[in-house]
Length: 476
Image (cartoon, rainbow, N blue to C red; front, side, top):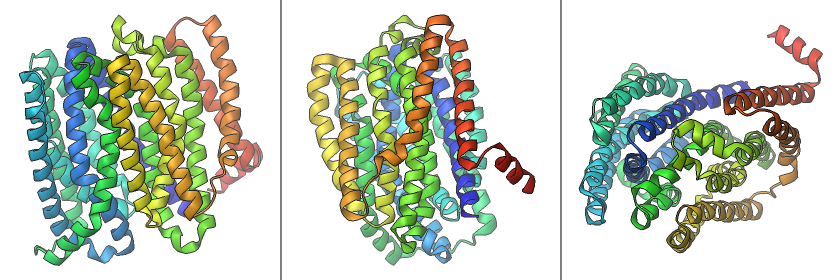
């Protein structure tokens, strides 16, 4: 039963994140094609600022509320009303700081305006995180999917129309803002059907939440600053065009990031509940997550090394984007480390060891800032790619040490065996396709089909063979 629930929750979040990733990816491609690298850099820079301050305002609150509501569901009404007020306060502070920082940095006036407008999205997105924390704590992630996916899908054609109508990046930012308001409206509509709000401000709850959330805010906030710092440094040292090229690379990483987030968020409630059952169950869940992520990341890295340039040319239809193939391959190697980082991070939080996460993000962010300035000032885009790779593995080392010292050793080989076998077979497939097939769409289609067949065969073998799987399906 737990396995089915975990699979269902992970799948729901995966669908949500995948839809978000696909629409964001498509939007970036359309901005590059219709407007150009400069405008893509503007949009990604503004989105970067929005994402940083939205995370500072809300992501730590969401993690804390999810954990506490998983254990104390009877307090849902208090979290909904008083938690929303607390979130509104955090959002106001975050937007004010965003405006001040952007105002004093040497950006063009049109870029500054885009950042201001996009920053308004902090308010609706942060408030919707409260309702999503409630859905997640009740392990009803399908409600998140139902309220977000339709809006994400409809938002894309509206944005394309806005670009074609000449509204530019400011128009895109306004569409983003109003679409998040619509999501918030839908989620509250669902919540009010099952939760009776207590329209009373619990000041003691707010004070306690502020004290408890500080570590989570710092962890999530500094972590996202670490992730977006390259764009901020590039915007000052390189300009909007370089930001656009870097963003184009990172957009190709989004599918894996969405998958890893969906899986780890889906498994987080189960890991939190398994704390009382002992370390064996926690290790089992963590290793399962790491193996599943490696099953995707290792073949993906290999594919980008073989066909990265062709993929960039296909997606963005501009020759200057194809020149980013080598930085793309370098950045992709960091996905291997990410396959371990997310599960280990949530494992520590479940065991109330979030101070280790805090230490990691502080160390990594400091090193990212220092290393990023040095490498980007000298090597621009290539320097940013090398910096991303170095920081991923430095982060991994800290998480491995924290888990090994406080919980149990990380058994790398156990999670690597099957993914390495799949990757070795896919490498042969890529080598053959590179020699005999010229069109990237055909290469993508053939390699995807072969990959799915290989994974399906391995899963069937592990389950006991075709007959066993067929019998289990008949029993259901």
